[in-house]
Image (cartoon, each protein chain N blue to C red):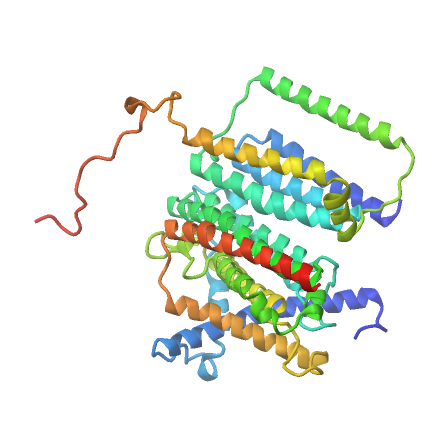
Length: 326
Length: 186
């Protein structure tokens, strides 16, 4: 696509494109959440800012930028102030490695699946830093819950992703989509369910939002944050949803492959990826509307007694399948 | 010096600096966060040396899981905010152990490779996998058995009654026998 451009210009263009996607896709998903939740609950959602409230999140952003940036007296200042950046930047790196189409990827490294999983696992340290650095017991409790939850759900997430990588015989995300065929929808279905549940837990979204349970812990690790730093945490959450939805699409739904054999290349393929990822993102939002919060012990029980055995079983099934048919 | 050399020196300096700050920091939580920087810098070193897979696994396992566990334990014990004061003999002993390990490792590397230049060949995922699951499969499996034993032993130690035997006087106090009451008392 960019073969005749000097590499420095290509790098700048790709970085700008990734940054633009990083700043617009989470907003689009947030807007979708406002409207979808509204209509599912018999409301209209935001209607004032722009036609049908499409500028609501822009207005929210302006509001956040105007607010005072407060650092509590009891806070550990450097840790408190650095935490939003630690939470946000990994998802930017991850987005650069997730392909939208066969040629539509900013950085196509050989082990891109591992890269995305590794950098997203760093983002959780931002939450822990916020929980501890705030100098607030509700934030600390939220940080504790986040730590326990993230350590438990990291394992099923990686095992489910490993199953797909094993089936495809490669760690490259573009390679996985190249190997994908429709019957993987059945063969890898348990891994897909495990991955979906674990990614919702990694993102700390309902029903696994015990770390920020607003009825018990005010707002968990984010309690003390105001203004732009709070907005960065929110952006990190929605950017994480975008990354996870795209990753789910690429791993389990065939990425840019359409139902017809020829439609996988070029812009049409990108549209397929975005369509499928929007569906997965809408599923994240639907879970939030439909289900109540899971209690802390139920959450751990689900991770260790259900998701982990299912993921291990799936890995065994995939291994047998690869040996028999591969 | 090529660009890679400069990059390696920069990442190495960051790693060494963060590691030094991690062991000299008086607040345990700050030490853990410097450890994050040091381990991430080590992943960067692997990356510069062309060992992409090792770098990513380093990031995934150490930064993503081990340090998260450390931070979790620190929050649980509330030791994170209390400054740690260690005596001079302990510091000298720690410095001696650190220097000894450095000399040992450096000596082993020097005796293995000498002062000559070695070409950078980190090996791709396939080569690393062939080594782990082919050539070095027995040490690898022995190591996993060792880790499993350590895990089981840790659970056994954590669940064992205090004092070695299950004496009722050693158990933690049972919760007070009070009925849970919701709402206001009549």
